[in-house]
Length: 293
Length: 273
Image 1 (cartoon, one colour):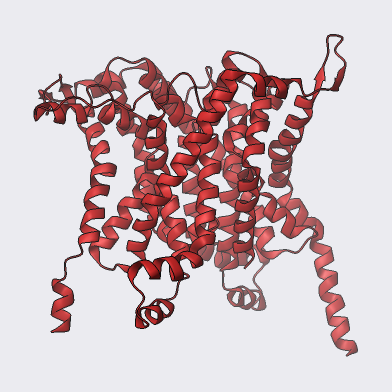
Image 2 (cartoon, chains in turn orange, green; image 1 turned 180 degrees about the horizontal axis):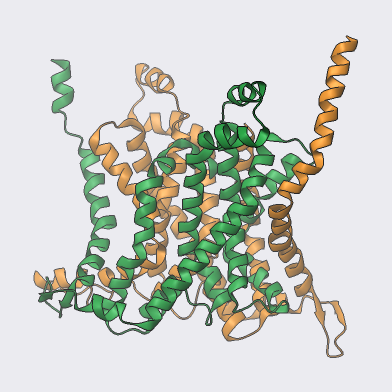
């Protein structure tokens, strides 16, 4: 008994001795997180509610927020962003759920090919993707060429309309959505599916009663990830989207750099945080839970 | 008999997905590839009138292309180097040492992922404004460095944790110094995964567009930023196509080496699946 305590003390003692070493080794990246993530967020909220008046003294004011929510142009941009995010999330689930279901149960070369293609967009930077979409779907693009060659009229190009970013963002987000859903489907055991089949469950009953309840968490994670990524996406909406109304990403960039109004840009950022906070917290919680397990 | 039947059954769903995905994912990239090797392609011809490398010479003769290639490579190298320098020792500490607040500090790297990214960049830019870091090389380095932290810590931590501790202890028992054990036992086992993390963070930084555009423009012009200006203002289509092919090279390298890491379940789990 006494020896055990002594040994335990010894171990605790050695660990104590290494505390400073551990803290020292992690200090630099932890400092960066504090300085470049936590502090900017606190400071962003502080700067936008604690505004300087004419005399240069700062006092509490919600002026910039009041302006945002009364300005029709800002509201249009916010609405376009919400619309794009919602449409993309819906389309992504509708496309990726069937693909993941197929990949979960199929085997062989064809399935490997489908999986390879579904993951491939991860290796195509979004700027190349934007360029490819313009070349294919833009005015006089490849689709127009092909339609023209068989005597059909040209398409109404989605380039520079709200559908341009939607197409690009969906394309770009397919790989991670499929990977997240596939990982969730991996937890659905073959036995439970066979058991349900044995009692005569059809395909849809199987999907609705056995599979979907088990992967609902993965679907929510996929949706949260998509919402966080798309809500403030910049490159694709900037290149493919309409000039006005614009999505929050390009809007913030323009307010910050071109209009040169950092306070208003930061206000827009804080509003974006507010709309995404639920998804953000849920996403982080699921990642942390997974990692801890 | 039963086996023959299953073999003969045609996987229509698979064929459907394969056909649609090939059309939607591969076809647009083939179009860009074709443009890059085209000298003349006028509407309404379905195939180019003249193939050739004319625009490769012209694109590679442009000074702005070379300066942005150099800029992108030096940024990505510097960011990856700094990231490895600060993150790998930290990852080792998280994997092996005990210190107060270890868990909360470990999960603090997730903080950046709880917020919409561009909003966070604007908030950081607000702080950089008062530090005069806007439009500077080091401003872009800092903002891209923050983007690599999560990958460069979490992946190596997993790598260090999977090293066989008994081998390390055995080496210590026969008198190897801690440094020697690290060099000869720990590093060779954790090495390949750490190399994959370094490769991914290099490639990720190379393509990072939003921070570079918000913080660096117009002084710091990386290859993706140049590509945006080609898309917006360049009437010669082939310049953009040639640049796309050049721009894709690092991704292609990542595709060759990191595909296995990404296809494995652990990668998706890192994203919270």
